[in-house]
Length: 110
Image (cartoon, rainbow, N blue to C red; front, top):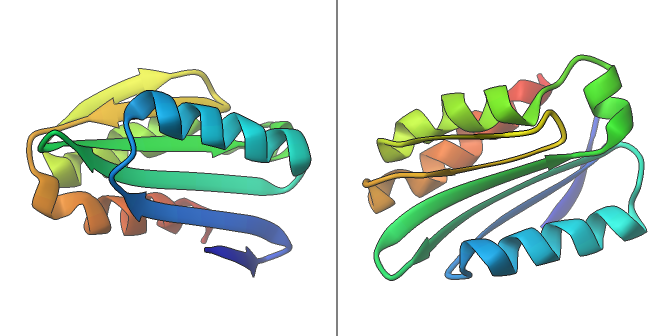
């Protein structure tokens, strides 16, 4: 689901991909859309929820941090995570909170 918000291409995904599949997908999208990209994916694989956040370098330069966004949003899935300013992932225990975690991550753009 690609949307435009404040001039930023926002792609959010919810599904059943593994963390590695989501990472591959995120970097493929980043290769195509190198600027003004905010990608967030919430997945449940084998009953375990995960959250992935990827940002373009210009958004990081503008003050956004994928690690901070993922950590804050992961509270919705009773988990935590980390990474780098442009890419972070988190795992958790509460699969039912994945939709709220995605919504929480998207709040960073407001």
